[in-house]
Image 1 (tube, rainbow, N blue to C red):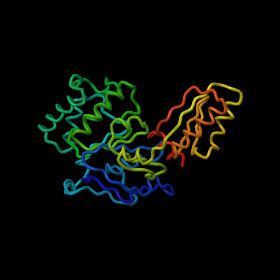
Image 2: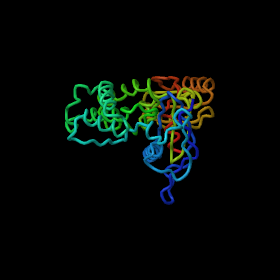
Image 3: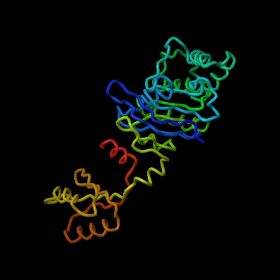
Image 4: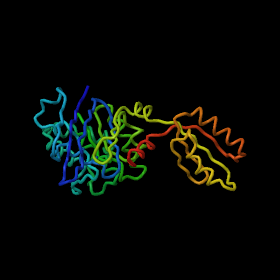
Amino acid sequence: MELLTVSGLRKQYGSHAAVNGLDFQIQTGRCVALLGPNGAGKTTTLRMLAGLLKPSSGQISWNEQVGHVRDPRQIIGYLPQMPVFYPWMSGQEFLNYVGQLANLSAKEAESRTADVLVQVGLKDAAKRKIGGYSGGMKQRLGLAQALVHRPKLLMMDEPVSALDPIGRREVLDLIQAIRQETTILFSTHVLHDAEEVCDDVLIMNKGQIAIKGDLNTVRKEYQSPVIRIQVEPFDGDKAWLANLKNRPYVDEVTIELHTAYLTTKNIDEARYELMKELVEGHIPIVKLEIEQTTLEDLFMRVVSR
């Protein structure tokens, strides 16, 4: 079931279209990664969906289960890329405050504060001043404030980009747990994070969606066989590797030192012809492997368009 439908969403700043006609749906219970390079329009898109920025045109529609809500922000949890807190407050005080801002009663806010502090692993730090929290703790507190009112949709803007490896691991584990109870949309340019936790992907470039769909379906549709061949240094090795791009069975070539990555649509022909050439030419081969293009390869092709 669709939780959210976006049609023709656009944000114009003067002559520049930061977001230029987006069309997509978010299904209930899914975890969706909004991918794209810096400047692709990810943050602008999230801010419009969160009601923090007015679209220039287009429509954001909610399904019937939540469409009766007067203000959609009541059912949205939002974690900005750089969350800001009152450093003189404790984590517990801040969440109580946020809960009541979200129209929870004082009793409900207190109960939910206790619950989400446990959920994000900050129970023992509940009464400490936020100013003394680490970066990872602040990010977890940011998640807690986005969850305190039980949102139907949790949106996060680059939730792990500013964290060290330990903090990043903690937040990704939290996202894995949270996705069991609410729909998630998060932006990132870290492909590994998206592949680890998401069901669906929306790949943006220059304000538009280039590719969208179920992660596994996108992989299958856009994957191509890749032959990785590594050779020992020999007279003319670089010229031989560079000349591989002229073979009829090769679509693309990437060369790193003495290793070439060949993308092909006909793996059988490529394998046969390449092996024949290696043997007849007495090419000193170190390694020959057949792989598949990755989500990162797809991402790079989209960005380079």
